[in-house]
Image (tube, rainbow, N blue to C red; front, side):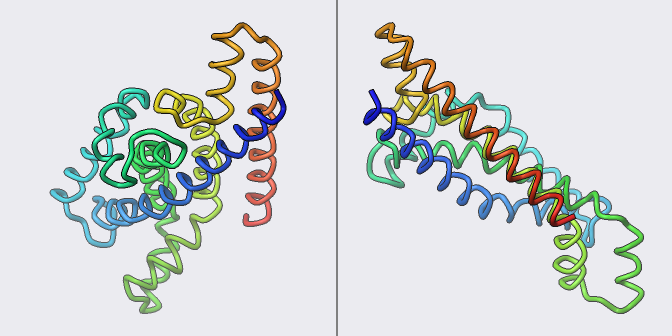
Length: 211
């Protein structure tokens, strides 16, 4: 049992790490655009904001298991195959991008308008306001969003087993549920609980430090 669970744990960490990294990088771009073009942004643009916001909402509305199947051709185009641990990173990332984009946008737009006006009064450019005010002030809030994203991806990675993605959730289903081996269910559940607790504790610690 233990070699199987150890391998599954490594697969889960692999999937969650890369999907988190890629979604944070790619999700940051639409978050910035949404913040800048929002009605209270530095460059309000109702058309751009409404269209991009609609796209984000559409992708957020898809249940992960459905998205997993729908984008199989896209997954195959990106990694050359539709099954496997690496292939699972694609749907995990696609599902996470709109979520983290909206979280980042909300975090950025919660910046105190008074601080922005103060920066303007000192002659700060839009880029300086963006990086030294919006982003700097929002880092603790964005960190909280990333922690929540990681926890969500741990849960989503369990469903990645439907495309042969492996991971702790896949072992729990195949061995614990389908083969009636209760010990697999118990150990896999405990591993996921420990993962979530450790990540949340780390997030709380970093939030306090950054705040």
